[in-house]
Length: 280
Image 1 (tube, one colour):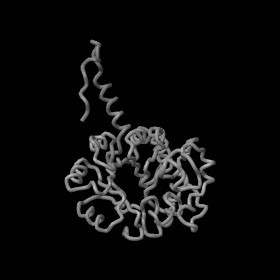
Image 2 (cartoon, rainbow, N blue to C red):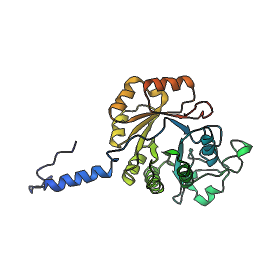
Image 3 (cartoon, one colour):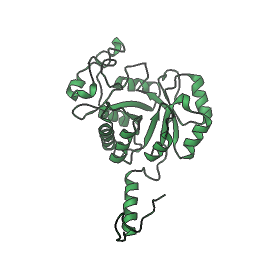
Image 4 (cartoon, rainbow, N blue to C red):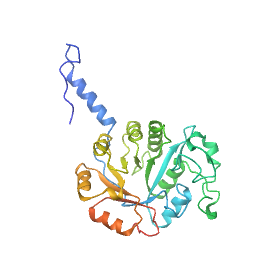
């Protein structure tokens, strides 16, 4: 609903041109919302960080392996280097998944690109590099794959990361039949993405149903809520669906949990177990 126009500006007796006010309001709405004809285009099954735990997460090797298991949609984590390059990594720090040390976002891309992001997993993947979002985008578009980009900011860079990821995604997928789905646990990152590229679909990630989560998803113009799978019940699914949003779940690695979510009528399942669940 459009806000009511006041007949007078605050503190001033002069009348306001209601037509100008209405046009301004409509322009703001168009800048922060998806196209009215947006239709959910994504498959139900989504491979977490490429291929779950079967390959080093967020590397091109992982996405290739997920594709070999029949998956057509992937989830990845995107953050900013110190010099503004969008690259893929989950943690804020480098130690768990690379040969580096310290905070990844504090390093320039040249230094990050030299790290070994595969040896931690197994000798098979020794020397695997951290990829850029651009590299993954080219892989996905060349093969007709879909992508869920989780905006994963280094703490303190939420707005900058959300803006950079959205702008680059809009450029990389310009003219593509299906855009990437942008998600984040950080509302500030999603708000910046909404402003930078309002045409890209967004989803709010939640690990708990914190006070105001539903209203925040609506405020951010989200097309989906992506929740810890244990949070979904019939009432919450109905609440989200009634608002025109989809219900996605992470990270589902158990067949019983998957069957329960399917029975509830949820719309997407993010899994590590690309070897257990067939996406067909």
